[in-house]
Image (cartoon, rainbow, N blue to C red):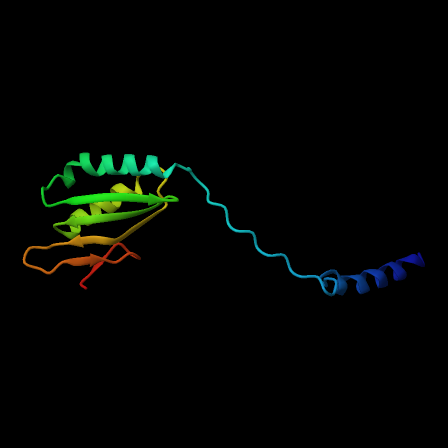
Length: 130
């Protein structure tokens, strides 16, 4: 029974030291986060997305000129659409394409009836006037 107080004393002294690290030791750097999900080659994304934009009946207006370019799964849409409605559809089509994890709209102009061209905002998919 005499060993119980000695054991309790050892535990009491060890607990505060448990969180300490040795001097001179650098903290480990956080590893770069891995992308999860489907990895699709950019050439496949370009081919599939441009085909989807061409065949979508909601984007059949002759005033719509859209093209997509992918780099590392990030897609930039380029071109002209008549309204924000078509811009939203193009964004929806791009986001639903396998392998796409980011869509940039800063190179799409929206021409509303009687309005100046509107350059799309890349952060929200909304549009702002230049």
